[in-house]
Length: 85
Length: 143
Image 1 (spheres, chains in turn blue, green):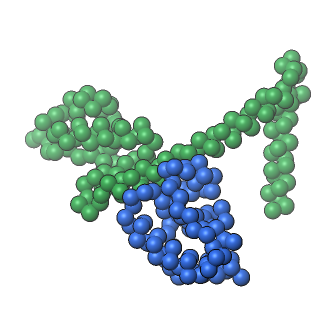
Image 2 (image 1 turned 30 degrees about the horizontal axis):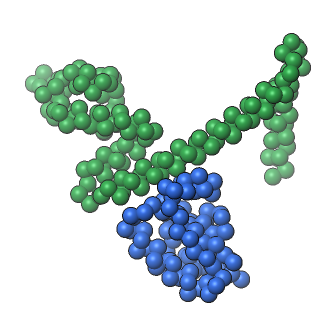
Image 3 (image 1 turned 30 degrees about the vertical axis):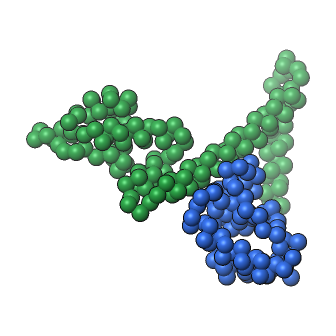
């Protein structure tokens, strides 16, 4: 089971829109094989620092920082496909 | 209008600092006298206080420039400033962690020294530092 975690701060309108698009991709590709978690960076700052997150938004997969900004849908798709094989 | 001395006094900075911020493009005089002396308005006082406060929060001059640009931009909003502040906090938290690791390493070194009367060439702290450096160099060569 892949674990996708998206670090962002609440109220970021730009992020909300982009995140919902990425979440839809995860749901479409995952079919029970990928979990999605919205992480409030302000509430989980220690965890973010532990993973090396230096800016928000960012995406970690299986507790490893993979994208230091929100990726394009194609990039996320490619990354997930690689890991689902 | 304020001279550079009065401006520095009001904002509680030195005149050298005012000149430096000006050189860095963070501040500009409102006008110059016929004799070429710089004159500043109240906005310069506010700007200097802003710079000082931001520096106290750990922002570099480059980041302060970014914040000042955001402050004067019609397109930017509060969220943009919040993102900069969050990125800064993350950076500071990373530094705090790195400092904690350094502090822990020093604690370990201090613990191994149990006899302060030994000659310097038997100093376990220096020996440990040399050993760890040798290990590091060996590791670098094998990498």
